[in-house]
Length: 265
Ligand SMILES: Nc1ncnc2c1ncn2[C@@H]1O[C@H](COP(=O)(O)OP(=O)(O)OP(=O)(O)O)[C@@H](O)[C@H]1O
Ligand SMILES: [Mg+2]
Image: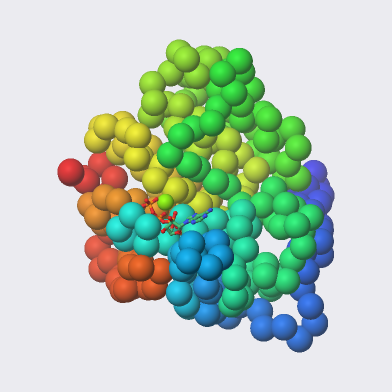
């Protein structure tokens, strides 16, 4: 009975954020199975001679539960695209839908709610609070989330049960990054967006971090995008999207996915 009541509460809570985002009647929602649908996305930074065309017309669909890597040279627009999907930035033109919600028609307050309730971010640098333990860093999020998992469960998912009471200064870079992943997923986000999560780590540590991200994707079904400069990491993905000069240069599906532990670079 309690489980059913909890399930009902979750269903209602899941509905509430949806109602708080803009969803104008009649606007095109994403196709069945799509989490994101981007059409004709452009992003221009600056004005006049200082203009930079970061995105030059991106059409993209990302699907429920998939693990996608985003490759491409420096400056090709990877972070810009990820930031727009995550509601941290807005395109100059084009549209992005997250499920039935038109992010491009959302005001700042709706985008803030969207990020808080639906998106987990992991960046190259971990941005942990140095004066808080691993558990307390995760609790910063679980204290305000709608339907969080316990902080210890999130730390367990990334293999850090033993480190819950440690401060960031007492942990390795890879352990700190896994705390950052635990913090990102503790609110049970619908999507996990990672911008070069292993960029600051050595190979061995990077693999532990990728294993943690992959486990979240597999066990929670969280649609995951990982930006990387390392083409080897693309072997883990369901699909590999490569950007070049603000455009999608290729989309490839991996017939056989490689486990993080098998990666070598
Ligand atoms: N806030 C900004 N103001 C002006 N130009 C920007 C801004 N953010 C990004 N750019 C420019 O947009 C282009 C795409 O940048 P972006 O950060 O998306 O590239 P990236 O593929 O993530 O590169 P990297 O691999 O180096 O992180 C670059 O030319 C960059 O200089
Ligand atoms: Mg970048």
